[in-house]
Image (tube, rainbow, N blue to C red; front, side, top):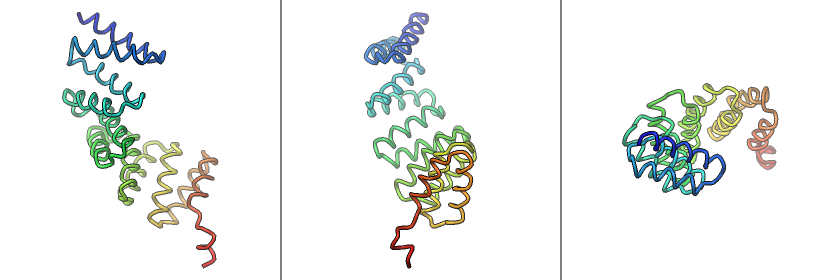
Length: 191
């Protein structure tokens, strides 16, 4: 029976790669019907639902996986990501923090946490989260961009200038976007 489950699970992954999503969902649901404790199938189903924009179903699957593996940082990150997409920022913050409690080095959870904190106006904490993301991934232009935006919001011009200088070393195009986004309006420059 286990061999059949694994065969169905792998076939579902092939269907997903081929963008035959209905077939992939059918196979994953069959695996879970036969063995509700097959965590990898539940996680795959959650990822697939998320990819398809079926966010509530994705959340349900991720929460099912977390019952068996409450410290799974990847599942917690994805749960936070889906909550963020739904603009459920407090739930996203909670999931990202739980992911980071399980694994402090998951840079995308720091990044997601920074975005969610910024969305609810917690800019100081947001900057701290982006600092961690940028430290873990020093060549991640998006983390540096968001860190620059956080410093701009907090009116920390010298820190923003440091971010611009660093970002310009490896992503000049994103640097241009950051510079434009943080320029004072013409009326403010004449004061």
